Amino acid sequence: MHKINLPLGTRAEFGERASRKQVLVNELQKSLEKRSFMKVNTPLLEYKEVFANFDLKQMRTYQLLDRNNKTVVLRPDLTLPIARLLTTTNIKLPQKLYYVGDLFKIAKELSGRNNQMTQAGIELVGYSSSKAELECLLLINRISRKWLNGRVKIEISHACFAESLLTNITASTELKNRIKRELYRKRIPEYQRAIKQFENTSIYGFLQKWPRLFGEVADITKMLEGIKLPTQAYSALQETVKVAKWIAKIPGQKVIIDLSTAPPQRYYTGITFKGFVDDIPEYLFSGGRYDQLLESFQAQPEPAVGMGIDIDLLSEIAELENKKEDKNYLFFEPDQTEYVSEWLLKNGNYELSLEDDLETAKEKAYEKNAKLFKINKQGEIENVVKNSSN
Image 1 (spheres, rainbow, N blue to C red):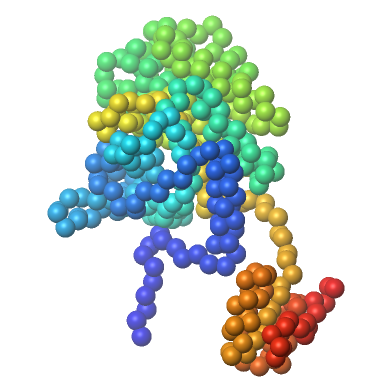
Image 2: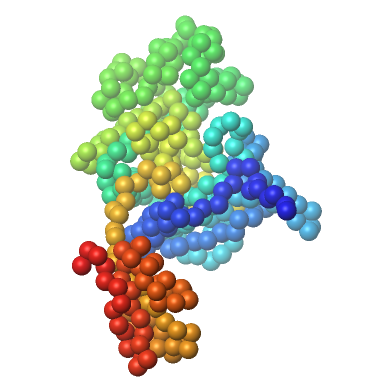
């Protein structure tokens, strides 16, 4: 006998877990389609070039060769394939799109994470207004209130803040990358050494505070009093504060600003956001503005905002209503298929009883606390076992 296991990091789903995921996906899809979002499906395999704006080495993607010896990858991201789709089709913009699908990233050993995950998301392409960001953030709030008892905390940042600030104080790409690396990893001693050469400059006071610029809007504003920032960095800060204040107006919604975190992906160009629940370290939601992404596919740049939802994590922590429906079994003889077909067409609430004899069918109905019906010789339905709750 061959012992066949799943490849490391992949999974098979069944039973309650699979059902919970399907309930969430169905509800999300219905909600988005009511709001005029269009469903998009992209293939699992894409050419490697599609992910030029994605750090393939860091993400450790699955790569293979097609019959023409061109490298293809199992998609590690779902936004870039949609950007590729928009540049190779005649979909009219602006457009609100949504997707649900699996993506694949080879997780680090002992990280406890799967290589395969299910993600849902929305992409609003052709919308330059900040209302596009608000569409995403309000969706997070609706999901939080519907399934998570309002426990989601939204973290707002800006993809260009760090780069715009550091470009103003140094021309060294190596130094900028070093400062950002230590800042994002919160390795404070290394960060302090990286910024030491600026201790006699006017920006040094900000650089010292930077790793602690994480908190509510009022706290961040107070920490930055009296500090002058370069024009572009100040503009990014003001935009971040503005969006955070809008979200803070939603009753019961927790929101913080984090100016010391890395963007979720390199292709973001504006406001970015993440959504966390309780003390779970992985984020449940992530997204932001990426106005230059289509340009990388030799197409005209279009303003765009997107957001991803970790369906696996959501299915683990969502508080779903446990709707119990009466179970109705229908016992029949094989030569009664004509009647069975008609009854199932009239009433889809019957589950066929596949037992060979009526007595065994009765035992199963009692065991499951279900009703049992049978088709008599005249092709009519008779109640054989009643539900004990009736």
